[in-house]
Image 1: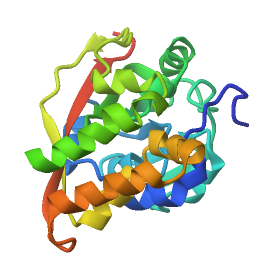
Image 2: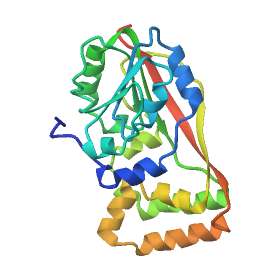
Image 3: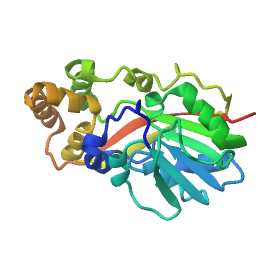
Image 4: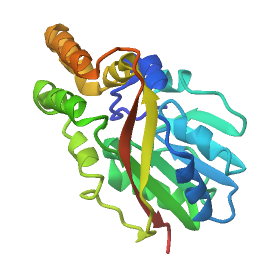
Length: 252
């Protein structure tokens, strides 16, 4: 049963979220495989639509993917060796000392860290690992980035939850009481049209809040400015995000 304090920012547009959220690079999961042994069970916490869980399944015998949002899990991708469970990060329901690694993709800032870390120390085997990551602002080309950044910081800036600042800071300001495991640099990249980028931006929780409060007027103006900077809508451009990882050894 989801915790009463669970803050659900994405259920209202779970299908759109699943369609437009970018994939994490395969190199990330190859690296995660290398930091633990054995590789029996991975716990993907706050799994959302299951992007990370599915990728983990290629490297671990089984994956338990938990999320407090039933709507998010309904939009998740079914996959062999992935079991989806509606449960919060702080009360996973997993057996003690059952997981070799826990991962949190773009969601650590939503969690009650003190309670979550207690759950990590209970669920993950001694000497196992925790890996959390976040990705920064989308980048395309300077003239396009300027339009997107104006929306992000000015138009909808006050509509971001306060926790968003932790993403912008790459989680460097969040407590992380584990022995650090150095990680390489990663980047996410997609080949997208204008409509795909607009679809992704439409999944931002701040865009959803702004739309409910103010309607579509300023958002339509943004879309027009972005289209003018993009050029022919069918033009495919490389869209990228810097991916920052914090990893640590549990019970070391």
